[in-house]
Amino acid sequence: METVTDIDVAVVGGGIAGLTTAYRLSRRGHRVEVFEAADEPGGRMRSSRVDGWTMDTGAETISPYGYPATWELIKELGLEQAGALHRIRHPVGLWRGGRTHPWVGHPRSLLAGAGMTARGRVQLLRMMLASATRSGRVDPDRPEDSGFGTRTLAQYGAEHGRELLDNLLAPVSSAAFGWLPERSSAAPMLAIMQGTHGIYRWQTYRDGQDTMARILAQHVKVHLSRTVTAVERDGRGARLAFADGTGLTARAAVVTLPSPEIPALRPDLEEGEREFLEASTFTTMIRVCVRLDRPLEPRRTAGQPRLYAFVMGPGEDSLLSGGTVEHNKCPARVPYGKGLVTLLISPRRAAEVYDLPDGQVIDRVLDEGERFIDGLRAAYAGHEVVRWRNGLPEAPPAALALRKAFVGRAPGPVEYAGDWIYLRPSSEAAIASSRRAASRVAAWLAR
Ligand SMILES: Cc1cc2nc3c(=O)[nH]c(=O)nc-3n(C[C@H](O)[C@H](O)[C@H](O)COP(=O)(O)OP(=O)(O)OC[C@H]3O[C@@H](n4cnc5c(N)ncnc54)[C@H](O)[C@@H]3O)c2cc1C
View 1 (cartoon, rainbow, N blue to C red):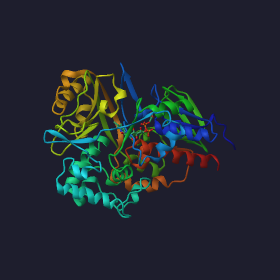
View 2 (view 1 turned 30 degrees about the vertical axis):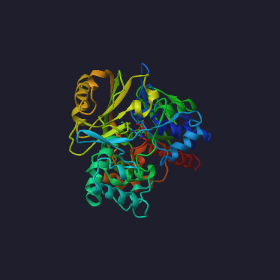
View 3 (view 1 turned 135 degrees about the vertical axis):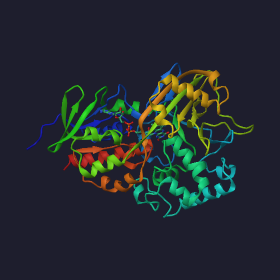
View 4 (view 1 turned 90 degrees about the vertical axis):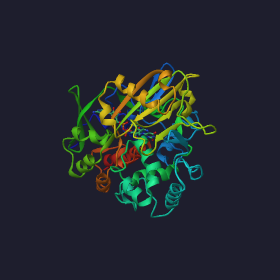
């Protein structure tokens, strides 16, 4: 018997994965609606705006390499022609021994050092050469199949070079992903580094990292402030329940929340799904945006280039894992003559800071930030503390081991999208997962 349904596809969550899934399915002719709990779309790709300052609350950069699904969408939406992208001109530095060392993660670090000794640079060169070989390459779509197995970053460092781990992989993954080397698998990070050629020619959206989400939301039907409380299989379709007590049926649903938030919404999870979702943990991210009355940046020596970001070197034991110098990243984000820095709480300190009132967080961050940025407190003009309980996929070995079974399931009426599907902490993974989800839903609807 045919089930009568309200719409073809209900997408739960209006982050970049949900919006892209809805966009792709709408273009295939399906009736799709997005249900988003927040009062604006974008999820972890939102930006906030205060008195001429534009602050990214989550994602902040994309790469021209290793982001194929993102660039396909950028071109389709005409964002490049519209001048929406800005190429970042400055390098990233490693804070070590009282100053920054530029060119972290950039091919130039082989010569410049970026805080590494000659031995560390040899380890880096070996890593770069290995990535060109079959056994050293990681397929970003199948990180579980690489020759690195489920080795953690710490284990990778023990085998391939301690300096490489301490001065590059650990500081970058800590600041960018909130990772701890002993908890996260090496393969997804190596996939990102290989795909992007490291920190090389990265870009940002001139008007905020929410640009793509804002444009996509104009192309699809999005219901804001609409919290979904349950998604269940309903015969050959799906049934949604909302926080206001209403419900809806659809021929299929796509759930795009961070994996740790999904089991509470899905009482009828199947065994293969539950195991992977529970293993697929996230890191907590806290970013503190500090508006400044002048453009300051971390201490550097004369002749050294200005930096757009810095990461914390080994043994610095700081409250912070690094930060972004937003006025160097993209001057259009800041009023003329002013400054903006974003400081990231170290993953080893995030639990201690998470529940503190904003006033205490900013106080501690300004004190600590003075160690790196002279005059920070005096230039303070305002702040925003952004907390993400589920900030980024953590890629633990247990999840990597379970991934193949999860992605190999037959399509059903309830599908998933989100960065965690690839265990890769990047918006590219979220967008790529949407293409995958849209194909699976289309296959299910066409059966
Ligand atoms: C601090 C930080 C820095 C980052 N930096 C970068 C970077 O520089 N480059 C990069 O490529 N990536 C970066 N990322 C990663 C990137 O932001 C994410 O990969 C991407 O935004 C994830 O999108 P998503 O749609 O999968 O999930 P989300 O954006 O989390 O979307 C899920 C959506 O579901 C909604 N929701 C939750 N519960 C419900 C409910 N019950 N009912 C309805 N809706 C609900 C949420 O409000 C949210 O909008 C960063 C992330 C963080 C947190």
